Length: 596
Image (cartoon, rainbow, N blue to C red; front, side, top):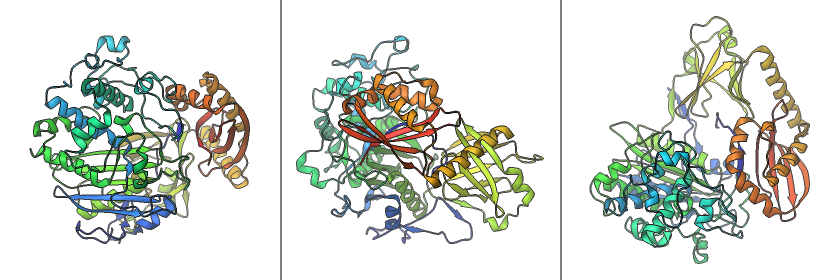
């Protein structure tokens, strides 16, 4: 899915007492939080797969440096064959740490230096010179740790029948590439910013240095030595192997048109693999730390897993306490989502799915495994029993109000039947349970809302604790709060009646015309949408150009998240365009995907 902007601030025990060698036939998944003194309410994996529209999932569990069990659940596609441990999935961004291991092997053998100017290695293309690169040269260490200041976060891939760009065209943002040019636009080393573009630069460097195709180089350097026998970076996947692959699905149960997207950006998103092979990769890295790998020495593995900035080592995220460090990476391609987590000491898990909703399911599986294995991280939070916390009606009313987290993102707190209820902009209502007199949780997600202590009268602010971040939200003035409530009431009415917001069709038509011309009116967009559009404009313009002339714009309905949904037909295709208008008429957010 192509997304122009979308801020998400509030996201919405299997029956084993040990990690047995035999895979469980089903899993009892735990919620994000559990209450002390109460038996957790669990949900069967099969039920969650159906609810989240995830046709298939495959899991490999690691224990004591070995694969303890591996099993597939569901099907490779609706009406298709069962998923097995041998079923191939796209690893998406988990392609990056595997690439990084290959780079570190070349560093170890003296063929590359992590701190040398990469332009000394690049032959077919050079990092464009500008005021940032003139002051500081770009290095492999920076490219692989997302600290080089490179542009382009990720890649949407290419439909199976679409023309494919060369790697140099991807780097330059030249047609038929569907992403902008890759270059440095902030001071190298100044901050951590995820950049798949940096890995594409590394891919070109590896081609220039080795003289081999990328799939061949990766097979020889990492895949074969690590025992990843079913894995390949070939893009597209050879037709002879398509029968081994799961098919990608969107969150509404509809398959990606034409099957899996193709990713010439192989180093960043091109790996086809299985959870068992990802487990072999993790075990290889664990073995390397113990001095038992043929690919990396213990010193090189330690350097790869040493945090540089933002909790990232070289090509991989790192975390955990000093006694139990771990490494991790997740991935999301069109219709595929996956997760890999492993402790340095020998436990871990690899989870792969064939749905855009698979990331949510993977987190539920991860926290369940973590709870059963008593891992120090990732397990559900244990909360005090709210029955033991007594709060007066006056206290609850003090917290009720509307709090602004970001432009266009507000948290509405109300009191209903003696309980606090939260509702983020464009999201459903969630009941809150008290953790203490001034801290509450929605329970279904791992988040906390904290109000100031010892204040008299209405709370002046609220702090959202989620995903390791703290976001402070100020209480809105009465006038601003009224505007938010009016907008919420208007949405409730529109959703019930399935009527579009006034001006949304005109905004869709205007935006499409401007995107085709390459001249968006950023003044009519929210800041977040404007920034995302600037970064993706070249690719978006190229995509629309391939559709031909606009033929029709037809309203389909109002989505539960508040979007007006239009089907936009062109000469050579059609898309579903979702648009959210702010009260002032500006476009708060928009995204689109092929109609199916």
